[in-house]
Image 1 (cartoon, helix red, strand yellow):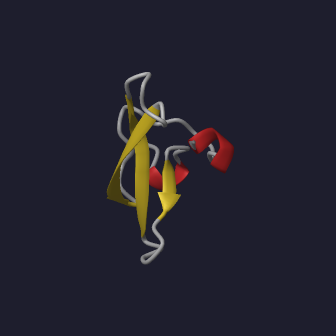
Image 2 (cartoon, rainbow, N blue to C red):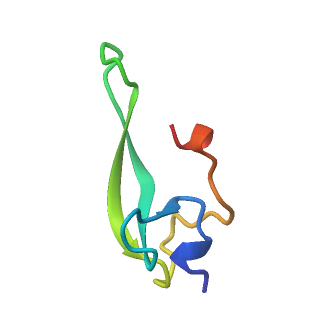
Length: 65
């Protein structure tokens, strides 16, 4: 089973390198908003088993925003 550390949606936590920030949950905002997308982040352990949203690889900053 893949781990969160191998998922493209997980970035290393800024304080604790054993934890990560999962960014796979995205919410489309109204057209009148300055930003069109909101990202709901949550903390995961890097060695947790990956969820059903797993995608292998690493996301670049441009892909994230």
